[in-house]
Amino acid sequence: MRESLRRLASDDGMTARLNAGRVRVELLTGEHITVDVERKATGADLLDKVCEVLDVIESDYFGLLHVQRGDPRVWVDLGRRLSKTFRNEPWDVKFTAKFYPPEPSELRDDQSRYQLGLS
Image (tube, rainbow, N blue to C red):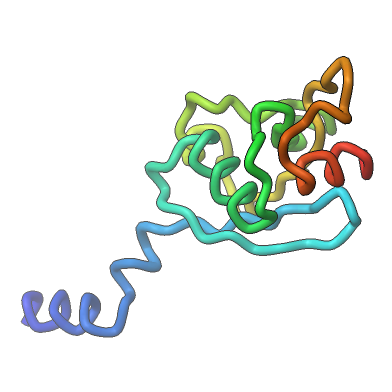
């Protein structure tokens, strides 16, 4: 009986959903997007996915903020697993500029320049 339930769960994608976390990302425009990531994913994996959605190539200038115990400006640790950073769902983060280049006009990527201009 258990094996048939396991097979049913994997057939309809339940296993994939159990191993995935849903992250709600607030963008610099004020819009929100939802990104699905594996629970084993790190902060860097999430940042890469968000930058991929936004077509941002130069992701070194950006980071993700989350609220921790009432402090709204805690950077997501890029090397730490998301399941350890966030205890309860929903996982909410804010995409924002972490560093500003000395000369923004020297950025190669227009989308990166645009996102930095929004912040």
